[in-house]
Structures are given as structure tokens and as C-alpha cells.
Length: 409
Ligand SMILES: Cc1cc2nc3c(=O)[nH]c(=O)nc-3n(C[C@H](O)[C@H](O)[C@H](O)COP(=O)(O)OP(=O)(O)OC[C@H]3O[C@@H](n4cnc5c(N)ncnc54)[C@H](O)[C@@H]3O)c2cc1C
Image (cartoon, rainbow, N blue to C red; front, top):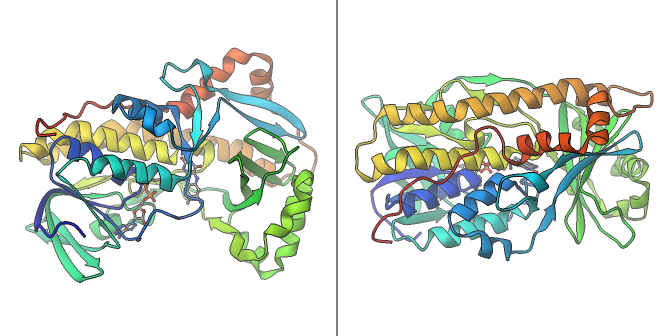
């Protein structure tokens, strides 16, 4: 813990993509900012490792794209799906109007370590690891800080603005009493990894067969695998031996049958309970929620990190100036929600459509399937693949870095 000060311009609960990017941008603008992360490091598996072209564009606008792309990563230019044995290209990123015309796959901890490394160049940036926000401090109806548990004991941190960037199980949003609108999801996802060997398929893709969906992400030395199951089905599966799951994996991916034994026990399989929700109101006097804390996204399209980052950029654009000048008001927080709620709503609507029209029917089906009309059109007319590429790669209303750079940099 490098800083024992009592009061900050902004205190951010949560050192995920949203919190860390906001911390970097505010520090860059000269705001005294403290990020609290409850874990000791960022080393957690299966946290979402897709860096979309719009996020790469933000890195470019920050002048960081070259060192960023020097980190180990894989690049995906075309995303596709295999439906009933037929491969269909879905999104072609090569025509996007961005510096990087691909999706980068990089472990989230490398991404976060990179952001921290650059944030630390600014004197007004502080990060406390193993520091868990446990409660809001309120005075006269206004949030004025956070109660934080640290290795040295309990601390009160005061700030002009508290930001809840503490993910989908956000303590901040629960304590603030924000109303949550649940949109529901018909599936959960089981994540695991299998080694990659010569002769394996090359593509990162989704595989749709009757009753199951299997997503394979090429991570060079291994496959990051997502096995989509009907909602709530994991408890029943877990009651049985892991061997039965291994057999299911070998059936969907026969080429991997020689290594499903790498799933030694259920401990090698991580459950992602899919939630799609959003807050009706993202702010209160002195408090704002962004990222998953404001809106948990479906894994459809892998856009969670992207939306979280875009929230952070928009929040910094709108709040850095007022925070640096000590004139932040509720009006500024309202503007952040107004700016980001629309992209969130549209993205979630699209995700729910895919969940209801494609995922639920595939999971509930036992007869053979063939690509629906929409996918057949994407297969036949390559230029149409630019539309999903824009939706997935850029998102609705992409944000650009407009927050100021402090003169004392
Ligand atoms: C298994 C899995 C796979 C995923 N795959 C993808 C993918 O491929 N692509 C994609 O775009 N998205 C994916 N996602 C979603 C993506 O990870 C999230 O949408 C994104 O990380 C949200 O960023 P965030 O900063 O809002 O929240 P988070 O990433 O959840 O970060 C919140 C941070 O806050 C910390 N924290 C929580 N509570 C406290 C507290 N009280 N005090 C201090 N710190 C706290 C947490 O430790 C965490 O570091 C996946 C999610 C999961 C769970």
C-alpha cells in the first residue's frame, strides 16, 4: 500500500478492465485517484481475454498500441461458427475503420498489468491490492467514501467520487440500493482448457450441434474451451463423475479425445453463471457504477470487457475535467449514464435475441441442424460479414479518448 492519504478525487472499487482503465485516464488527467482491488494479483483464469478492435483503438489513442501489441497475444481476423458440420464465417474484422483490424486474445492479467504499469507513471495514481471495499460511507444522503479492509486493518477512504467497478457481484451497487433489471439467460457456460497439438483445427470458433454449443478459442499453446449448457444444469452434472463430461467433450470434438483426460476432476471446470442485467440508475450523489457493476453482459459476442472499457473512457471524458477542478455535480454523473445506457441496451437486446432465437433452440434440439438463413447469407455474401464485425468489434457508439492530459505529467 503506497499511499496513506485520507482523501482522493476519485476512489474506484475494483481493479478489472473498467476500474483500471478509468484509474489510468483520471490519473493522466491529474485527478488524485485510488483503485482498490481485493485480490493480491490479477492471476485468475477464465476472466475474458478478448481485446476488441475498439479497445485496441483506445490503446492507440493513448499512444500505447505498440508496446501493448509487443505482449504475447493471438490475432483473430475472421470469427466463424460450425453449424451441423458446416463452417460459416460470421464476422470479418479486416474492413473496420480502426488501427487494428483484428481481435486480440491476451490473458486478462497481462492486459491489467500493462494498464497498471502505465498508470503508475502518473504521480496521482494509487493502487491498493488486497484492499476490499466493504461498505459505503454516507453523509447527508451523499456517498463520501468507502470502508476498506486491508492487510493492515480497516480503513476509511474518502473521495469526491466513489466508482463501483467491482464486477457483476458488485458490493457497491448492492449497498447503494440500486434497482436491477434482470433480462435472463437460458444457459450457463463451463470453461476449461485443453492442450493444443499439431494437426488441430486452427480457427477460433463456435460449434453448434443438436443439444450443445462448444466454443474453442485458439490460445496458441492451448485451447480455451467453453461448453454451453442449459441454465442450472451444472449441479446435476457435477453430481456424476467427470468422466461423463469428458465423454461429452470427446463427442463434440473427436480430435481432442486423446487429451480429455487433462480434465482430472470437476475442479478443472469453471462454471460461469450467465446473467444479463442492468441498473435502472447508475449513480447517486457521490457515486457511479460502470462496467459489469452497472450491466452484466451475456457472453454472446464476448463484448463484456469491451463495454466495460468503453464505460471507463466515456466516464473519464465526462468526469476528468470536473473532478480535476473540484466541481463535480450530479449532472455530470447523469451524463455518463445517458451516454452509455443506449449502447448497453442495444447490445443486451441483440444478445437476448441470439440467446432466444439461436442458443435456446440449439440446446433444446435433438434432430440435426443446418445454418439458419442469416448465416447462409453471411456465407454467400462476404461483404455482409462486415455488419457483425462492426457490432462485435466496434460496438454501438464507440468511445474515443478525449479526457485531458495534466500539464505536470
Ligand atoms: C468465465 C468468464 C469468461 C468471460 N469471457 C469473456 C470474453 O471472452 N470476452 C469478454 O469481453 N468478456 C468476457 N467475460 C466478461 C468479462 O470478463 C467482464 O465483462 C469484464 O471483465 C467486466 O469488467 P469490469 O471491470 O466491469 O469487472 P470485472 O472484470 O469483474 O472486475 C471487477 C474487479 O473488482 C474486484 N472486486 C470485486 N469486488 C471488490 C470489492 N468489494 N473491493 C475491491 N475489489 C473488488 C474483482 O476482484 C475484479 O478484479 C467473461 C467473464 C467470465 C466470468
